[in-house]
Length: 279
Image (cartoon, rainbow, N blue to C red; front, side, top):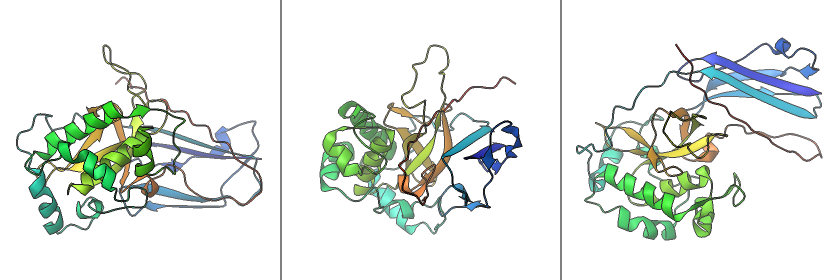
């Protein structure tokens, strides 16, 4: 038996509802026994699905339209505060919401402190340097020092393990950047989303466009807010980056998480297509 969970929607907040699986004509299916939807503890909207029947296959399909806008921030913004003032501002800001910076200053399960990463990143993160300039320098250093290798790590790999190998994927590079930034007082978050599959004419194809993508977001003060840095591609997150969720690390906002009962093994396959829609 196959279980079909099809999410469809058209919203900037990605609050997608499960659609009628009757569209899967000609295929036996089992509809979830229970479905709960709501906001998670971070910047994430989640569905909790319970399937009680025996299954041999689970197919999850997500379709949605989203409108993106050009980032308001210029990469050369000279008004960014220096790193020395960022930590103090984050700790004194009376904001304990999921967007508040204080929660992203400290260690998290998949991004624990690392002396090795902190020392390696120190030359790029001087206290008197603009937080934006520091973010660019750190992003570039990771991009140039690490090799993209889809076989080197897994979803359970920690930042320290990826750092020692100097190899990994977008999740690993984002975690290394997060650990480095936090070690020097910059609130850093993990962002999960998508990349445009086909780039605009004349632009290179970004790495990670055929699966979920990940990048880091650094809090750059109240006036600027959160800025996305993509160390996999050495670019700021822009209109080709589609924000889905933000948390302290991958474990907070994993696209799919859960448990099953049974003795069989499992295989996972994922495909992603992001295409521009003409007006």
